[in-house]
Length: 367
Ligand SMILES: Nc1ncnc2c1ncn2[C@@H]1O[C@H](COP(=O)(O)OP(=O)(O)OP(=O)(O)O)[C@@H](O)[C@H]1O
Ligand SMILES: [Mg+2]
Image (tube, rainbow, N blue to C red; front, side, top):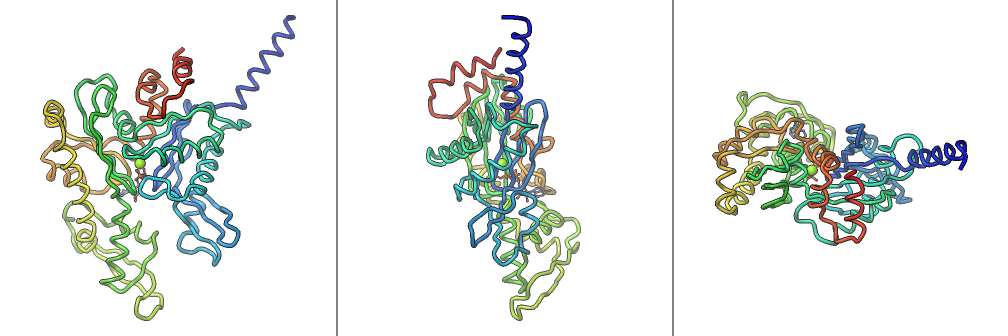
């Protein structure tokens, strides 16, 4: 082949590479979807909601844009969360949402992604896993590696894959709390409970309606939680926030003050349930593993771990040392990203059903 011919062939190959780009790390949670692209870091961080036109069934907005509409939707629009408690509740909307975010995450003209590492909950069923794989295929991702969320969170929180001693990670998400004990880059023991930080929102809405006679929206409840709720008894019980909504009795617009002491009492049962799940899981460990955790304590990850006073509260409940990961909400996606740097680990931990191509492919990107 002439020099020019070779160059043309080479350019053709590069152009092709441009179109088929990206190694993605996808953490699709019930509260938020975070996507990182290898070499570019986190490119998508959006709430996992879509706005649907009830008349046509069409999705009209995704993520932040949809969330903006929440509570103030037009008559024929509903804002829904297609993932509930960490699993696919609305398959079609999950597919469309993932497809949308993956497209946004791609750079330039690329239409396909070569591969993606995706997190799944430990307790996920084959049916739920297949739903996620189908959603990824719909989003034109060539190869999907499913990794258990707890392991990804641990790696993202700084646990080394070659550490033979055990570490415990508690990921508190929107809909789920996942306790994972990891050693040697694998999960020794894990348990996921379908209770998370969003359950505090529901408890707040319920409380304000039933005991204070005001119906408040989801976004107001989220603000109350973020600004006022603490896991340990607040120093200033009387600190308050004005919330507005709809009066239960009259139906008219209304407002009232909610104090930190009041939301503390409402959130406490949810937080206690999470702590109980942690204690129960840690009581199921083999003795050597329990010994490691006794020495090392536990690491908190997930958005729910950012609640004020949670570290202290967990210390008290577990009688162990507790630390919160840096940027706890991003721990899972960081761990997934890290898998690309450790292909042998990725091959070992991938949860997908056996696939004939997998071994050759995994070794292909070891080079
Ligand atoms: N500062 C904060 N204080 C309390 N809660 C917070 C804070 N920041 C975020 N959260 C809560 O964290 C939750 C989202 O966490 P995260 O993004 O880890 O969930 P997710 O991964 O989408 O959910 P899941 O893992 O259950 O599917 C939300 O309920 C949010 O309200
Ligand atoms: Mg999560």
